[in-house]
Image 1 (tube, helix red, strand yellow):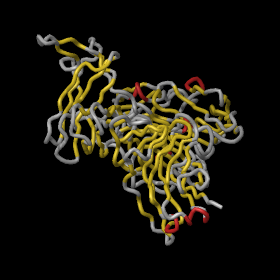
Image 2: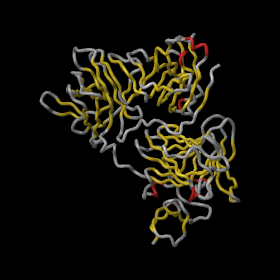
Image 3: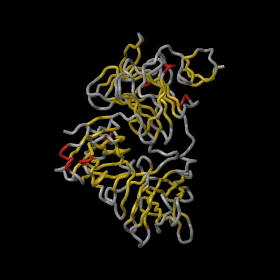
Image 4: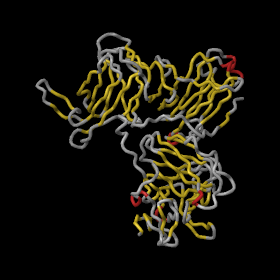
Length: 509
């Protein structure tokens, strides 16, 4: 009997860089190229029953299990087991599958005794539904004495792909023939575009860094519009990096007379253009914007969770607005009416912040909106923040709602700060709320509370901002006209400095 132990990861491996990063989109069925070695941080997009092999030649008699750390895309997970860990001899008859849960971040599977007789088997990740998405962060084999050995990279050579498209930030590539091509995409897996009709006027740079001086000859960048390739840029042998510039002057083609015609870029490829010299090895270390740009200066934002009124709240079909009493005061609330489906709550003037929750049955007053904080009454509540850049720092100021301490984890698109407390107790006042930090690795992040619910007074991005009125939920509370400072503390008219009143920023002298 296989055993599953679900672990809460307090901190996950970082996958972002200081600048905007780009990825290689590996085809489900690569043509004229192969990835020899995949990095441990690999994003996977599956077709149904697609399979990605993690390791081959595994002697299962030497291990008691495997630990997988990952970030799942809950929007693609219809059931537990949307993605499986599959281990055995590679055949369905002699392999065992165990389902991962998209709402968790770390799973340990204990190998069945029957599979421990296999001394040269394989370990794989399998998607059970179409478009299942997962970011693998680490895979570790666990020896009998409990020692964990990380699998540093995953095998390639064409043997590990079936009906799955990996996205990697770099890797060791072999071009097997002319015009084998790697599609370059952004951090969300979307094609790189540049509309050169006056719509895009900025200059963008993408830096390709190689693991060693480039030995391959005949590599090119191919810029494509809807009709196909329109510009081909040579990559010189012997270089260690190449900067590709996209601008109104470069996104286009020239005729024999040198006349330039602007084009609209819809796909970008790195291709092998040489007629011979294959296989051609290329080690791509990273693809990113220069650190000085995109890479743009960090932008702060401040979101206050106190004083949210019913008219500021939008709930989807799995919830309904209500009222409740907290500390003898009647306040707005939201009931969860779904059954196993997520309920999402959004707020006017907080367009980049949402709350999400699901449960096996309906639950009254799951969200409570008090004068100085918002309370989430059940565990597994999720805070979703969008519109971020890699390395943006998000700070939550939180408290437990009762005697059960709150625990917060990085669910998707971010990493937890190593200095975060393991748990957060109930605070006596909002002035004593504890700060927990997360660093964005994607444009949208999800933070989950896993213990017993929580209270939140405010959320800061990169330390907050003075442009409060664009980003803060209006502080329109029951005792209308209350005044708050930028820390979210209630003040009176004698306070000097920047204050928030009815959702607008003022300077009080």
